Image 1 (cartoon, rainbow, N blue to C red):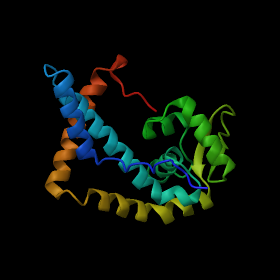
Image 2 (cartoon, rainbow, N blue to C red; image 1 turned 30 degrees about the vertical axis):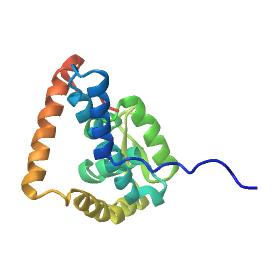
Image 3 (cartoon, helix red, strand yellow; image 1 turned 135 degrees about the horizontal axis):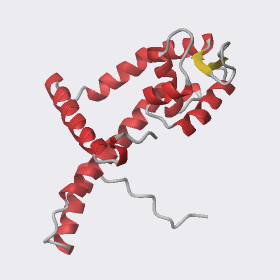
Image 4 (spheres, helix red, strand yellow; image 1 turned 180 degrees about the horizontal axis):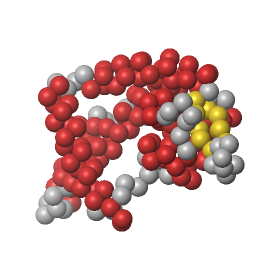
Length: 185
């Protein structure tokens, strides 16, 4: 029995999609400048492509982007005794409520441990376990190499320009948010 369903058409390239959307808006609303929408769509597609590529570093280790961010934060920023959940939240830009869930997942995987303060039983710090440290140490170089390859399409000067422009935009956006603070994920 043969199927009459057509195979899915390949998705258009981002460049082709942007041109199509620009042409569609020119037909429907020639008075409207769609450039802000197109730029943000481009940035959204860039973010998705970067996230998919970065995920390749840690996917086989059964961790997700949030777990990876916390593990990297603990490796780079934590003293030997660890970080409090509040410090971890500030250094990884993840909200307190989300930190609790994400730390719980890493505790279940035995990649981090919670160390209760001997002075205050209500206070605890989170630190990498030896297997957690070994995992991050094993993945951090391939992770940085992968990110370097992703940015390899840009010259060093273009990378600095991209960083400067992205920082300018995020600074503007953070300044216009309530309380003038970045909103953690």
